[in-house]
Length: 126
Image (tube, rainbow, N blue to C red; front, top):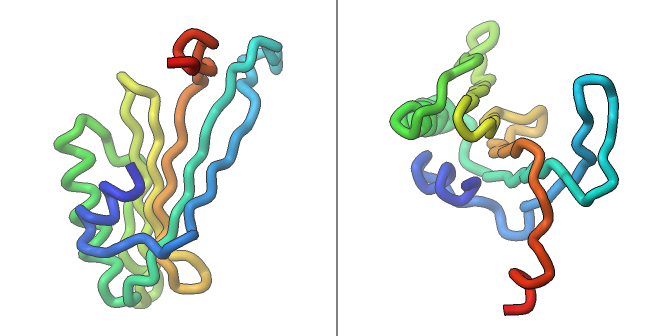
């Protein structure tokens, strides 16, 4: 998904920048099941020039809206300087997306999943 968003934005992800982040699924009463459930955050970066960030984020926002995501937050500048942020979510899949300008000037692509179950042993042995 991060690669698809970067292509849509007209940029490329920096080689080796992808970072999966696994965490426990925590219920609304702070309960954690011991059955392997997890959430995945997947982050990747692009060194796209700062002046291209607003147009890149606009393109990603349009693509996500076509895919049924809603924008939860959006900006292109802060105090006249490029400082993009796009937060989007899709109710049906419970995926959350962030695309933003980082403090170091990179363009961050971040996908967060709902709770997922690990594959069954039969599915992994094929």
